Amino acid sequence: MNLGEPQLQEAIAKRKAIWTDFADIRYLRFSDQCRDVLRGTVVVDDRVIHGYPRIGRILALGRGLSEQFSAPFWAEEKVDGYNVRICRIGGRTIAITRGGYICPFTTDRIVDFIDSSVFDKDPDLVICAEVAGPDNPYVESCPQFIDSDIELFVFDLMYLDRSGFIPHADKYRCIESYELPAVRCLGRFTTADLGKIRETLRRFNEEGREGLVFKEDTPERRCTKYVTSNSSIADIRSTAENILELPPEYFTSRILRLALFLREQGLEHSAGLDRQLGAAFLDGLLAAIAQYEQDGKAHHRFRCRFRQRDSALALLAHLSDVARHKARITRRDLRQDGEHWVLEYDRTYPSLNTLLGNLLKGGQMYD
Image 1 (tube, helix red, strand yellow):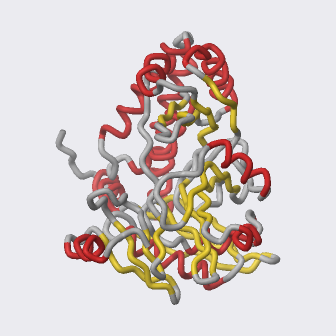
Image 2 (spheres, one colour):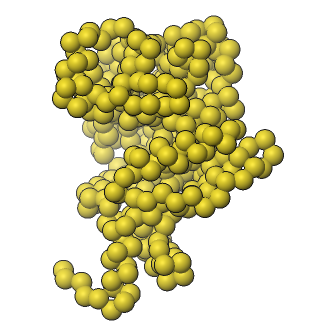
Image 3 (cartoon, helix red, strand yellow):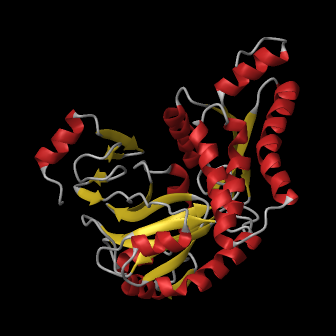
C-alpha cells in the first residue's frame, strides 16, 4: 500500500476519509481530497484504488487545444453516464463510483459486461469505465444510441496501489486483448488537425452524442474535454425538474457552452434551436406540475435491472443514505423478470414539491 499510516490517520481525523460498509466489506473512502490523495480514493484490505482525477473543460476548441497541449493527443468519445472503477479485491470483483462508494448496482451487473477471467490474468488491474443507459440508478439522461438497460464503456486502465494510468498504446492493446467494451477512439491528433476535430464534433452534434475527451500522448497525460450543443440542451432537459436544487450556474454555464459551440462551429442561430432550448426548460417543469396535480408529488422514476434481489435492496439503502435531506427515495416495485430482478423507485425533491404545493394552493411568491 502506498499510503502511509500517518497520512491515513490525518485524513480520518479531518473527516476527509470515512469508514464505510458494503455487505461484508469495510473500506475507507476519501470523501474529499487530502494532500495529494484524490477524492474517491478507496482503501480496502490494505489495497488502494486511487481516485479518478477531474478533467477540465475547454469552451473555445481551437485556442483551448493549443493552450492545453504541446504534444500529440488522443481523442475519445465522451459518453453521458456515470464513472466507475472496477477491480478485484479479496477474490471479489467490485465497482467503485467517482465519489468512492462501492456501488451495489454496478457491482451486481459487472459480469454482464466484463469476463472475470480478466482479473485472473491481471489481478491488480483497475478498469475505469462509464456506465450509461436509460435504466441506470444515478443519471437522469442517457445517450440516444442506447435504447434500454445499460452499457459499459472502458476509457482508462490503472493498477491497484498506483496513481496514474497505463500509457495509451498499452491501454488499447489491453482493451483489445481482454475484449473489453470501450469508448470509441477517434485517433491520435495534433493541433494542426483542428478541421478534422471540428468535423467530428459537428457530426456528433447531429447524432446527439455528447462530445470528446482529449488525452495528451505523454507520461504527464494532460486531459481536457469539449461537448456539443446537443449535450448542453440534454443536460438542461434532464435536470429542469430539479431546478431549485441546483445552483443557477449549472444552467447558465450550459447556455454559455451552447453559444460558444455555435460560434466555434460556424453554425447559424435558428428558431428551431430557440425552441429546443426553451423546451428543455419547460418540458421538465410542465411534467413536474402535471405529476404534482395528479399524484400529489413531482418525482423522477428510475428503473434498474439486477441479477440478485439483495443488490436491489442494497441500492435503495445506499441511495437513501447518500441523498439524505436533498431527495427522498421511494420504492415502487421489485419483481422478478426472467433472470433479472427489476427495481422501480422514485426520487422526489422536497424543495420543488413544497413550492408547487404552496403556489398551486394560491400561495404567494416574492421575487
